Length: 266
Image 1 (spheres, rainbow, N blue to C red):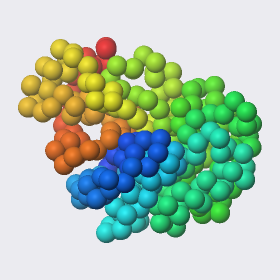
Image 2 (tube, rainbow, N blue to C red):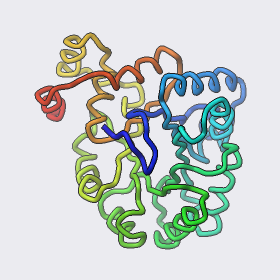
Image 3 (cartoon, rainbow, N blue to C red):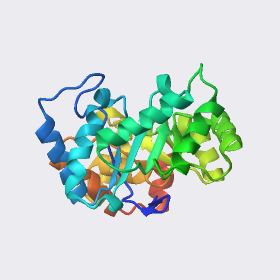
């Protein structure tokens, strides 16, 4: 399990906010409910919250900012991301400042390049990320949706210790696709943050998952999340209290090595 990111202790599963406050555009009608959902997740011990400037055109960040007001900022780990059209140096620095403003915080815990760009040199973007870190706008930097080739290039640009994490799609069904990236990250001390860990709600029907869930008296979602914690910090979207309870309880599940090996055979 991942229990530390940078210098902070973290809960081994976080919450994602894609779809909170809207998707490509802002939707305001569910604001109070969504703020309460994030507050409830934090109250259950979940302290990693993942958002991005692109989510709901920045409104997701605004909702996260409102939800965290009741809590100790230093005990929270807030992640945001720069969209590919903002990866030129000045644009990226501006995006980080605007995310911080919408979140109404003094710094980000982790700032990520959301997707690689075909038009902006990676060196330009990563040097801007290092500027953000050096100037206290983010305590850590990383990438998202980078495979081994781009990760290697990133390490050559920033040095071996500056890329804290790679956020990738990682779930029970795409283990083979994610394997090379996970292996590279493990070799180089880069943390894996797993988005869509529950396959966007389409949990696969699998005898191994079902049997292990029945054996332990837990949900299939808990089995999957706990399995993914072996290699990553999963960030499922939390939509209601029952779902959040399920997410939080997954940390308590113990899987023995035989069960883990069985699930790795997917």
